[in-house]
Image 1: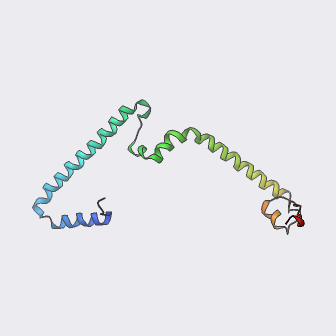
Image 2: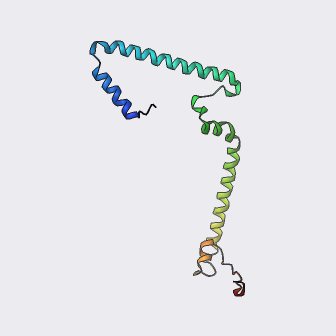
Image 3: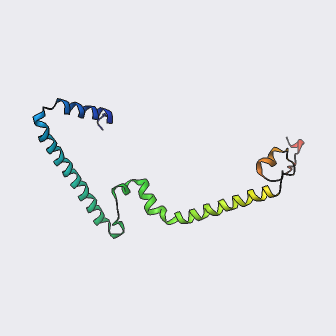
Length: 133
């Protein structure tokens, strides 16, 4: 915002309040309240106009819904979210079943074999052709 950060703006406001004569503070606070009221009315009117022009399916529109990430999440991804949740639960169940089967089978066929220990299954023997290299 014009190269001024939040802290600089805060310090400028504090400095303005300190340097303002005490007899002008009530008048300035009334003007600031009017400006804030006016800006709030503009924002509310713009939101109401946007809702009415978008139609009844957007009657529950909030200003935060206009953020692209929130908009996509609310209007596009909600349809598939239940399906994704069920798939995630199914995958978790399969993972749990596989880990229980591995534990029930006991130690691996070759407990000192690193590949078998990492995969959770008996190690596979891969043919090696020394002449091919």
